[in-house]
Image (cartoon, rainbow, N blue to C red):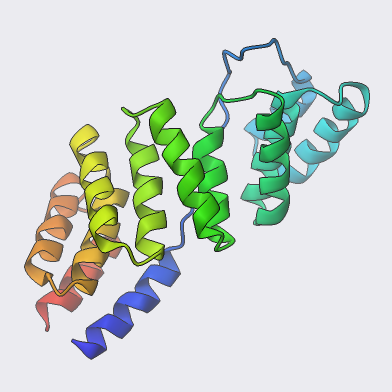
Length: 213
């Protein structure tokens, strides 16, 4: 079991927490708009250009919460979690609650190992939209990182009950079960992932590791 536990720790680190909710056209409490050129840069995933163009817009419209959110998202995709958090917080302070901003902020806090903030933010996301599987998944990840296995399991299972095809929730739940010594439960989740997606390489490799123990 010690060998497998070490492998699980490496495996979890290699996966990261990259699941994010990409920007879509919002229905905000206020009418916030970004310029077409800036939006186009976001769509083609040219995040450095998108940041520059949105910053120019903010020079004229410093309270444009959508532009602040887009900059935060772009910094997140570039791996700069501190700036991602900074801009999300500014957008939320202006009343922006659309496009999964609470989920993305909570996940960014988690990447920065600010687990109390991550849990608090993701709880708020769950309260705001309890039928969103990603919100429960994000909260489960934060509990898992905080070594609160019972609450993590509960939230993973809620995510799966809302979206049975949520393979990320099933994968991390299998990691949790492995850490808990519940290898049969872990294997069941991994087999379900492969039923959903036979090409899921992470699930296949992890299942092989379990089955060799």
